Length: 483
Image (cartoon, rainbow, N blue to C red):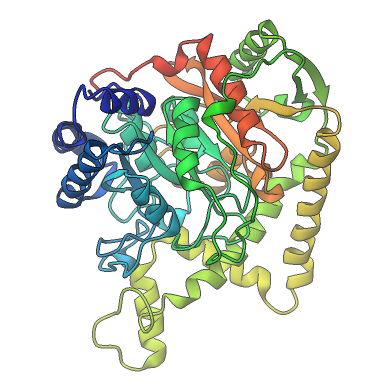
C-alpha cells in the first residue's frame, strides 16, 4: 500500500480494494517504524487521522466520491492546525496549539484528506537544508548522511521514503522545488496568490506560497486542486477561477516553445547536472517541443536582492514573537527589556537571529534607500526579464539546483554557500511566477531535478509538461534503498 501514488489510492478507494482506515493504519505503523531514521515528523496525529479516515469511509459508503476523499497526507508544521502543535520548527512556538485551521488545512479536510501529522522544517522556513529546526536535522532517505533540502525537508523526506503519498509545503525562495530535486519528487510552487496564506505562519509575506509535494505531476495536480482558490481572509489571495488540473495533464506538447536561459549554464553548475538537463531537453524535443535559447540578464542580481527583501520582511513578521503576545517566554525577567531580549534570544535559533538582524539593518534609517529600495527595483527588473521571455516562449526550463544534496553540516559554517544553492529558484518568488521541479536523474546516487517556470496562473501548463515527461521516463518511480 505504501508504494501507491495519490492517484492509485483514489482508484483503490473507489474500487473498494481497501478502506481509508486500513491504509491509514498501515502508514501510521510505517512512520512509527521508519521515521526515527529520518526525523521527518515533528508531531504525529494518530487519533485525528483515524477519526478522519473513518469519516471518509462513511462518506464514500454514502455515495460520495473525490480524488482526495480518504487520502492520507501531512502538513508542513507552519500550517495552523486547530488543537495541534504548530511549531514552525522553532523553540519559540514549541508549546503553541493553533486555535483555528489554516485555509489550506480546512480546504483539504473538507475534501476528505486524512492528516497523519505535521512535518519537520527549517526554523520559521529559513534554510535550504532542514538543519536549522529546533527538533533536529531531517535526513535524506537517498543517503542518510545528506540533507533533504529545505525548508520543506520534512515533507520531502517523508514522501520520498514512502511514509505517505503527498504532503503540503511552502516555497519562499525554492523551499518546495529544491527539496523535491534533492529527494526525487515533483514539487510545485503556484503563482503568488493562487493558494491562501491565511493561517500559514509568515516568513516573508510577499514571497511565501503554499503548494504540493508528491511523487508525480498527476499527484501534484490532485493535491493542488484541493489547495487552490480565492480566500477572502487573505488580502493577497487572487480571485481567479481554478481550472481542473487533472483534466489538463494529457495535452500534446507538439509545438510547445521551451526557453533555456544561457545564464543557467555558468561556472557554478555541476557539469553532470548540466548533462542531465540536456537529456531532459532531448526527451521533451521527442514529444514535439521546440527549444530556444533565451536570456535573463538580471538573474545575477537576484540572490542579493532576495537576501535583502526576505530578511527585511522576516524582521517585521517575527517582531510579534516577543514573550508577551506570542511564543516562548523566558524565566524570571528582571524588566520588560530583559523579557524581550531573553525570550527572543532563547526562542530563536542562530539562522533566524541572523536574518532578523540583516532585515532590521536593511530597513533602518539611512540604509533603507541603499538596500531595501534598491532590492525592490532589482525585483522589478527580474520580473521584466521574465515578461520579455514569455513573449517568446511558453515555459522556461533549467536546473532546479546547481549541485546535488550536500552532506549534513557541510555548509553550516558558511551560510552564504547555502544561500547560493537557491540561485535558480528564487527568481520565481521575486516575480511571483509558478515553478515546478521534477526528477531528471542521479549524480553519485543522489537525485537531481529539472525546473520548469511558466507565466502567471499557468500551473496547468507546468503539470501537463511534467506529466508527459513522466509518462516517457522512469526517474520518478525510483525508490530509495531501505524504504
